[in-house]
Image (cartoon, rainbow, N blue to C red; front, side):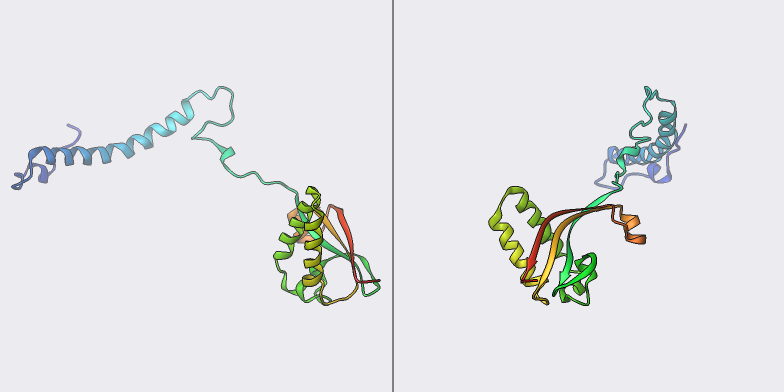
Amino acid sequence: MPFAKSASAMTPTPPGRSQNTVKQRLASYQARLVLPLAIVIFYPMIAFLAPTNGRAEFYPFFAWHLFAKTSSHKADVVLLVHEIEGVRLDGPTLFFELRDDFAAARGQNIQLAKLLDDYVFAMARGDSEMKASLNEVIENTYLRDRANVRYDVAIIYYHPIERYTDGTIIDIRTVASNQKGTL
């Protein structure tokens, strides 16, 4: 007899409760004991003894494809500044690196990245009206601290870890060249 009846199962049933309810509770208790034991025994057996038909993965036992795959490269749309007030910079400089020249660069506002994404999408759609409107927002909001600025909207490609550690950018593709004011 694998399971002995518990003392509570042998006591007389309280009034209003049928013998059937006690049997159901006992069966439920026994199932709660047996089920985890069965899982612990049979799950590894199925995992290691089942045929995999040449597959390296056997779902749900060995399913590494469930984990996210990440790309080693990333692309961002950025503002590259070449010249400020007639003074040519050493090379194209990312807008957010020019904290001394632009107050908006000190804030690291993510809205600029979203605005630049919209700018590139407007160019891809051929929407010159939207492009002109976004260009005006860029110049009047982010470049407002200087009257004359020559800049590019560009897409940079980089490996996130390399860029974080040493600032390496793999490729820069200029999407549009613009100028605020007269240089």
